[in-house]
Length: 321
Image 1 (cartoon, rainbow, N blue to C red):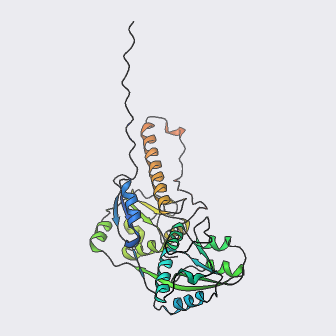
Image 2: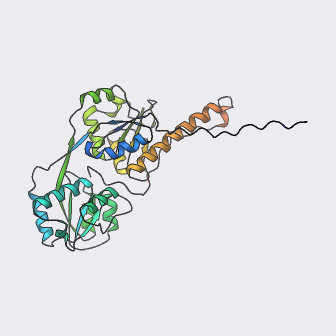
Image 3: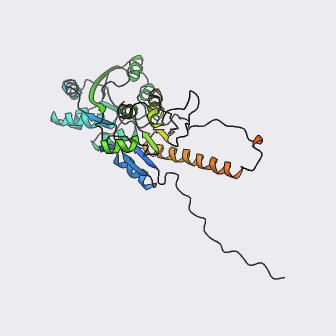
Protein backbone atom coordinates (compact mmCIF):
# COMPACT_ATOMS: atom_id res chain seq x y z
CA UNK A 1 0.00 0.00 0.00
CA UNK A 2 1.45 3.31 -0.98
CA UNK A 3 1.67 5.97 1.73
CA UNK A 4 -0.92 8.69 1.76
CA UNK A 5 0.32 11.91 0.18
CA UNK A 6 1.49 14.51 2.63
CA UNK A 7 -0.62 17.63 2.94
CA UNK A 8 1.26 20.82 2.15
CA UNK A 9 2.21 22.86 5.19
CA UNK A 10 0.74 26.33 5.11
CA UNK A 11 1.25 29.20 7.49
CA UNK A 12 -1.80 29.97 9.63
CA UNK A 13 -3.72 33.04 8.60
CA UNK A 14 -2.64 36.04 10.63
CA UNK A 15 -5.06 36.89 13.40
CA UNK A 16 -7.12 39.98 12.79
CA UNK A 17 -6.50 42.73 15.30
CA UNK A 18 -9.71 43.28 17.30
CA UNK A 19 -9.28 47.03 16.75
CA UNK A 20 -9.19 46.68 12.98
CA UNK A 21 -11.64 49.06 11.25
CA UNK A 22 -13.23 50.17 14.53
CA UNK A 23 -14.21 53.83 14.67
CA UNK A 24 -12.62 55.10 17.88
CA UNK A 25 -13.39 58.53 19.35
CA UNK A 26 -10.38 60.20 20.99
CA UNK A 27 -11.64 62.90 23.36
CA UNK A 28 -8.33 64.39 24.53
CA UNK A 29 -7.50 68.02 23.73
CA UNK A 30 -6.32 68.08 20.12
CA UNK A 31 -2.73 69.09 20.95
CA UNK A 32 -2.39 66.00 23.15
CA UNK A 33 -4.22 63.49 20.96
CA UNK A 34 -1.75 62.70 18.16
CA UNK A 35 0.27 60.00 19.93
CA UNK A 36 -2.84 58.14 21.08
CA UNK A 37 -4.45 58.50 17.66
CA UNK A 38 -1.37 57.12 15.90
CA UNK A 39 -1.24 54.16 18.29
CA UNK A 40 -4.84 53.30 17.46
CA UNK A 41 -4.23 53.74 13.73
CA UNK A 42 -1.25 51.38 13.89
CA UNK A 43 -3.69 48.75 15.15
CA UNK A 44 -5.98 49.38 12.19
CA UNK A 45 -8.57 51.55 13.93
CA UNK A 46 -10.19 54.57 12.31
CA UNK A 47 -9.68 57.49 14.67
CA UNK A 48 -12.27 60.20 15.16
CA UNK A 49 -10.60 63.17 16.80
CA UNK A 50 -13.24 64.88 18.88
CA UNK A 51 -11.75 66.88 21.76
CA UNK A 52 -14.41 67.42 24.39
CA UNK A 53 -12.39 69.84 26.52
CA UNK A 54 -10.03 72.73 25.98
CA UNK A 55 -7.20 73.87 28.24
CA UNK A 56 -7.40 77.56 29.10
CA UNK A 57 -5.51 80.04 31.25
CA UNK A 58 -6.76 80.69 34.78
CA UNK A 59 -8.67 83.93 35.40
CA UNK A 60 -5.49 85.42 36.90
CA UNK A 61 -1.80 84.50 37.05
CA UNK A 62 -1.32 86.36 40.32
CA UNK A 63 -1.27 83.36 42.65
CA UNK A 64 0.85 81.16 40.40
CA UNK A 65 3.39 83.94 39.83
CA UNK A 66 3.60 84.52 43.59
CA UNK A 67 4.21 80.83 44.19
CA UNK A 68 7.06 80.90 41.67
CA UNK A 69 8.73 83.73 43.56
CA UNK A 70 8.33 81.78 46.80
CA UNK A 71 9.82 78.70 45.15
CA UNK A 72 12.88 80.71 44.09
CA UNK A 73 13.23 81.86 47.70
CA UNK A 74 13.31 78.25 48.92
CA UNK A 75 10.01 78.36 50.82
CA UNK A 76 8.67 74.96 49.65
CA UNK A 77 9.85 71.52 50.67
CA UNK A 78 8.02 69.83 47.77
CA UNK A 79 6.38 70.72 44.47
CA UNK A 80 3.81 68.19 43.23
CA UNK A 81 2.80 68.15 39.56
CA UNK A 82 -0.33 66.13 38.83
CA UNK A 83 -0.44 66.58 35.04
CA UNK A 84 1.64 67.53 32.03
CA UNK A 85 -0.61 70.55 31.55
CA UNK A 86 0.36 71.80 35.00
CA UNK A 87 4.04 71.39 34.17
CA UNK A 88 3.77 73.27 30.88
CA UNK A 89 1.84 76.20 32.37
CA UNK A 90 4.16 76.40 35.36
CA UNK A 91 7.28 76.59 33.22
CA UNK A 92 5.67 79.16 30.91
CA UNK A 93 5.24 81.46 33.89
CA UNK A 94 8.67 80.52 35.24
CA UNK A 95 10.15 81.77 31.97
CA UNK A 96 8.09 84.95 32.11
CA UNK A 97 9.69 85.60 35.50
CA UNK A 98 13.12 85.16 33.83
CA UNK A 99 13.78 82.04 35.87
CA UNK A 100 14.53 78.43 34.93
CA UNK A 101 14.86 74.99 36.52
CA UNK A 102 17.50 76.33 38.92
CA UNK A 103 14.67 78.07 40.80
CA UNK A 104 13.78 74.67 42.31
CA UNK A 105 17.08 74.62 44.21
CA UNK A 106 16.86 71.88 46.84
CA UNK A 107 13.07 71.62 46.62
CA UNK A 108 11.97 68.06 45.93
CA UNK A 109 9.64 67.34 43.04
CA UNK A 110 6.95 64.66 42.76
CA UNK A 111 5.00 63.72 39.64
CA UNK A 112 1.74 61.89 39.03
CA UNK A 113 2.09 59.75 35.92
CA UNK A 114 4.78 58.79 33.44
CA UNK A 115 3.71 61.53 31.03
CA UNK A 116 4.09 64.19 33.72
CA UNK A 117 7.49 62.77 34.66
CA UNK A 118 8.62 62.86 31.03
CA UNK A 119 7.55 66.50 30.52
CA UNK A 120 9.36 67.50 33.71
CA UNK A 121 12.50 65.84 32.41
CA UNK A 122 12.19 67.81 29.17
CA UNK A 123 12.32 70.98 31.28
CA UNK A 124 15.44 69.85 33.11
CA UNK A 125 13.79 68.50 36.27
CA UNK A 126 14.14 64.88 37.33
CA UNK A 127 11.28 63.89 39.61
CA UNK A 128 12.37 62.73 43.05
CA UNK A 129 9.22 60.67 43.51
CA UNK A 130 6.69 59.05 41.17
CA UNK A 131 4.19 56.67 42.81
CA UNK A 132 3.52 53.25 41.35
CA UNK A 133 -0.15 54.11 41.15
CA UNK A 134 -0.53 57.23 39.04
CA UNK A 135 -3.13 59.15 41.05
CA UNK A 136 -2.85 62.17 43.29
CA UNK A 137 -4.27 60.30 46.24
CA UNK A 138 -1.76 57.47 45.83
CA UNK A 139 1.09 59.96 45.67
CA UNK A 140 -0.01 61.69 48.87
CA UNK A 141 -0.51 58.40 50.68
CA UNK A 142 2.91 57.00 49.73
CA UNK A 143 4.92 60.17 50.45
CA UNK A 144 4.68 59.37 54.14
CA UNK A 145 4.76 61.92 56.93
CA UNK A 146 6.66 65.16 56.61
CA UNK A 147 6.86 68.85 57.32
CA UNK A 148 6.90 72.01 55.29
CA UNK A 149 4.92 73.65 52.53
CA UNK A 150 3.97 71.68 49.44
CA UNK A 151 3.19 73.58 46.24
CA UNK A 152 0.60 71.96 43.97
CA UNK A 153 0.03 73.75 40.64
CA UNK A 154 -2.94 72.05 38.99
CA UNK A 155 -6.35 72.42 37.38
CA UNK A 156 -9.07 74.65 38.72
CA UNK A 157 -11.66 72.79 40.82
CA UNK A 158 -9.50 69.66 41.15
CA UNK A 159 -10.54 67.11 43.81
CA UNK A 160 -9.42 67.92 47.36
CA UNK A 161 -8.69 64.39 48.61
CA UNK A 162 -4.96 64.73 47.96
CA UNK A 163 -4.78 67.96 49.97
CA UNK A 164 -6.54 66.35 52.92
CA UNK A 165 -4.16 63.37 52.91
CA UNK A 166 -1.12 65.66 52.82
CA UNK A 167 -2.50 67.74 55.71
CA UNK A 168 -3.09 64.62 57.81
CA UNK A 169 0.55 63.60 57.14
CA UNK A 170 1.87 66.89 58.55
CA UNK A 171 2.44 68.88 55.36
CA UNK A 172 1.02 72.29 54.53
CA UNK A 173 -0.38 71.95 50.99
CA UNK A 174 -0.65 75.11 48.92
CA UNK A 175 -2.79 74.66 45.82
CA UNK A 176 -2.59 77.17 42.96
CA UNK A 177 -4.54 77.18 39.71
CA UNK A 178 -2.25 76.67 36.71
CA UNK A 179 -4.98 76.07 34.13
CA UNK A 180 -8.63 75.24 33.75
CA UNK A 181 -10.58 72.86 31.56
CA UNK A 182 -13.72 73.96 29.71
CA UNK A 183 -16.09 72.19 27.35
CA UNK A 184 -14.65 72.40 23.84
CA UNK A 185 -16.32 74.32 21.07
CA UNK A 186 -18.75 72.11 19.19
CA UNK A 187 -17.40 70.81 15.87
CA UNK A 188 -20.55 70.58 13.81
CA UNK A 189 -19.60 67.99 11.17
CA UNK A 190 -17.96 65.51 13.55
CA UNK A 191 -20.72 66.03 16.12
CA UNK A 192 -23.40 65.17 13.57
CA UNK A 193 -21.58 61.99 12.57
CA UNK A 194 -21.19 60.92 16.19
CA UNK A 195 -24.79 61.79 17.02
CA UNK A 196 -25.86 59.65 14.06
CA UNK A 197 -24.02 56.68 15.58
CA UNK A 198 -20.86 56.92 13.49
CA UNK A 199 -18.54 55.31 16.05
CA UNK A 200 -17.80 52.03 17.81
CA UNK A 201 -15.69 53.08 20.80
CA UNK A 202 -15.39 56.23 22.89
CA UNK A 203 -12.29 56.66 25.05
CA UNK A 204 -11.91 58.82 28.15
CA UNK A 205 -8.45 59.63 29.51
CA UNK A 206 -9.70 61.87 32.29
CA UNK A 207 -12.91 62.59 34.11
CA UNK A 208 -13.09 66.00 32.48
CA UNK A 209 -13.19 64.49 28.98
CA UNK A 210 -16.25 62.45 30.01
CA UNK A 211 -17.85 65.55 31.49
CA UNK A 212 -17.12 67.46 28.29
CA UNK A 213 -18.66 64.70 26.19
CA UNK A 214 -21.91 65.03 28.12
CA UNK A 215 -21.67 68.80 27.76
CA UNK A 216 -21.69 68.40 23.98
CA UNK A 217 -24.12 65.51 23.45
CA UNK A 218 -26.23 65.36 26.58
CA UNK A 219 -26.94 62.24 28.68
CA UNK A 220 -25.07 59.07 27.60
CA UNK A 221 -28.36 57.30 26.93
CA UNK A 222 -28.87 59.58 23.91
CA UNK A 223 -26.04 57.71 22.16
CA UNK A 224 -26.80 54.30 23.69
CA UNK A 225 -23.82 54.62 26.03
CA UNK A 226 -25.75 54.07 29.24
CA UNK A 227 -26.91 50.80 30.81
CA UNK A 228 -30.19 49.42 29.59
CA UNK A 229 -31.33 48.98 33.19
CA UNK A 230 -29.95 49.28 36.68
CA UNK A 231 -27.97 46.04 36.59
CA UNK A 232 -27.06 45.16 33.02
CA UNK A 233 -23.85 46.76 31.73
CA UNK A 234 -24.57 45.96 28.09
CA UNK A 235 -27.35 47.51 26.06
CA UNK A 236 -26.80 45.67 22.80
CA UNK A 237 -25.71 48.77 20.86
CA UNK A 238 -22.33 47.24 20.08
CA UNK A 239 -20.56 50.39 21.30
CA UNK A 240 -17.85 50.36 23.94
CA UNK A 241 -16.87 52.90 26.58
CA UNK A 242 -13.23 52.70 27.69
CA UNK A 243 -11.60 54.59 30.58
CA UNK A 244 -7.91 54.95 31.37
CA UNK A 245 -8.32 54.20 35.07
CA UNK A 246 -10.69 53.83 38.01
CA UNK A 247 -10.87 57.55 38.83
CA UNK A 248 -11.89 58.38 35.26
CA UNK A 249 -14.28 55.43 35.22
CA UNK A 250 -15.89 56.62 38.45
CA UNK A 251 -16.57 60.07 37.01
CA UNK A 252 -17.93 58.54 33.79
CA UNK A 253 -20.20 56.15 35.69
CA UNK A 254 -21.52 59.00 37.83
CA UNK A 255 -22.41 60.81 34.61
CA UNK A 256 -24.44 57.79 33.49
CA UNK A 257 -21.98 56.02 31.18
CA UNK A 258 -21.78 52.26 30.93
CA UNK A 259 -18.04 51.77 31.46
CA UNK A 260 -17.04 48.54 29.71
CA UNK A 261 -13.25 48.76 29.98
CA UNK A 262 -11.01 50.11 32.74
CA UNK A 263 -7.32 49.82 31.90
CA UNK A 264 -5.35 47.90 34.57
CA UNK A 265 -2.23 49.76 33.38
CA UNK A 266 -3.50 53.31 33.62
CA UNK A 267 -1.63 54.72 30.62
CA UNK A 268 -2.65 55.39 27.03
CA UNK A 269 -0.88 52.21 25.92
CA UNK A 270 -2.56 50.27 28.70
CA UNK A 271 -5.95 51.56 27.59
CA UNK A 272 -5.39 50.30 24.04
CA UNK A 273 -4.30 46.86 25.25
CA UNK A 274 -7.22 46.56 27.67
CA UNK A 275 -9.67 47.54 24.93
CA UNK A 276 -8.17 44.99 22.55
CA UNK A 277 -8.39 42.27 25.23
CA UNK A 278 -12.01 43.16 25.96
CA UNK A 279 -12.99 43.02 22.30
CA UNK A 280 -11.07 39.77 21.78
CA UNK A 281 -13.02 38.26 24.66
CA UNK A 282 -16.27 39.25 22.98
CA UNK A 283 -15.12 37.68 19.70
CA UNK A 284 -14.07 34.47 21.47
CA UNK A 285 -17.42 34.26 23.25
CA UNK A 286 -19.28 34.80 19.98
CA UNK A 287 -17.22 32.05 18.28
CA UNK A 288 -17.83 29.70 21.20
CA UNK A 289 -21.56 30.33 21.03
CA UNK A 290 -21.61 29.61 17.28
CA UNK A 291 -19.68 26.36 17.73
CA UNK A 292 -21.90 25.18 20.56
CA UNK A 293 -25.22 26.16 19.01
CA UNK A 294 -26.12 22.49 18.44
CA UNK A 295 -25.16 21.46 22.00
CA UNK A 296 -27.53 21.09 24.91
CA UNK A 297 -27.76 24.61 26.27
CA UNK A 298 -28.63 23.31 29.73
CA UNK A 299 -25.00 22.36 30.36
CA UNK A 300 -23.89 25.97 30.11
CA UNK A 301 -24.54 28.41 32.92
CA UNK A 302 -25.30 32.01 32.17
CA UNK A 303 -22.36 34.22 33.16
CA UNK A 304 -22.62 37.87 34.05
CA UNK A 305 -20.99 40.38 31.80
CA UNK A 306 -17.43 40.85 33.04
CA UNK A 307 -15.34 43.99 32.87
CA UNK A 308 -11.62 44.55 33.15
CA UNK A 309 -10.96 44.95 36.85
CA UNK A 310 -9.10 48.13 37.86
CA UNK A 311 -5.82 47.19 39.46
CA UNK A 312 -3.62 49.22 41.71
CA UNK A 313 -1.34 50.11 38.83
CA UNK A 314 -0.39 53.52 37.44
CA UNK A 315 -3.11 55.84 36.27
CA UNK A 316 -1.67 58.31 33.82
CA UNK A 317 -1.56 61.83 35.20
CA UNK A 318 -3.20 63.74 32.37
CA UNK A 319 -5.82 66.39 32.51
CA UNK A 320 -8.63 67.62 34.64
CA UNK A 321 -7.24 66.39 37.94
